[in-house]
Length: 63
Image (cartoon, rainbow, N blue to C red):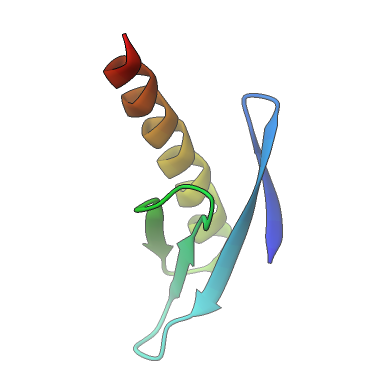
């Protein structure tokens, strides 16, 4: 598990190596917030983007 900081908030991310290659990541506290990447670095970048989009959509739905 790694900590991911987005917009000054921290989230726990679980990153696992995919048996078919690459990596899969999800944020347990944000249901449906998942991503993947070919490398750990790409996956980490993708999960940050996924969190930002998740929070953006959630915020828009609250308005």
